[in-house]
Amino acid sequence: MSKIKWKRTFTWENSKYLVYFLLGMIGLFTLDIASKWIVESLLVEGQKVEVIPNFFYFTKSYNTGMAFSFGASLPMAVGRSINIIISLVMSVGILAYWILNDEGFNHFQRTIAMLLSAGAIGNLIDRAFYWEAITGFDGVIDFLQFYLGGGPSSPANMFNPFATFNLADSYLVIGILLFIGYLIYDAIKESKQKNEFSSDPRLEKEEHHEGEN
Image 1 (tube, helix red, strand yellow):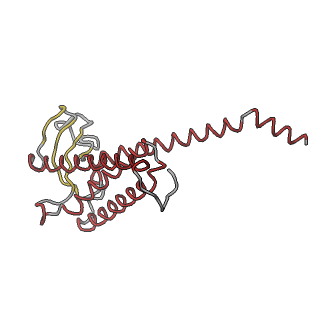
Image 2: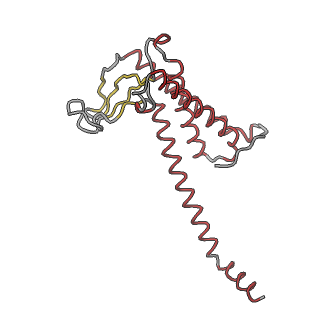
Image 3: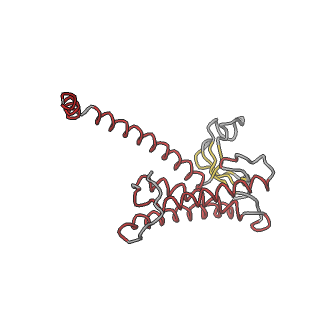
């Protein structure tokens, strides 16, 4: 990633990709919010809708912890306050870094930023505003449930069900995995370029010529 630029002149030519990917982020965010409220209006808590037998179900649940229910054992007010702060810092930080550095980003980096921004903001909205006094329920709406150990009729374990999450969680996980993959690719590419540069025969000749002098 490039260094932060605190000054930037916005023109269509140098900002068009920023606009495109901001629209993409808004689209992903809208899809996340809409999917949650469709599930909220159509399913009751705990109800399962089979999509792929013994593997994938729509199951509505409310998560007051972090992604994949981490932190759900904390007192609700404490856990949700921590989650709101984390989501807010992530959302503002990612968006600010993205906007200030977009000129130096490639499409792959923009895609990562788009996924992370949409995921962080999507769950921030849930954690900040979905309280029982306001909406009639507490927490983030989760509904994508996967079983990796035989399905609902098989004994429960850490893989059965594996997880229940939402689209925002998916954006975050995919974005983080892509970011890690990009860092590994960038490190390998940089190492390869250094090796090619150091083994350039022209450099060896120049070094030999300098030694003779």
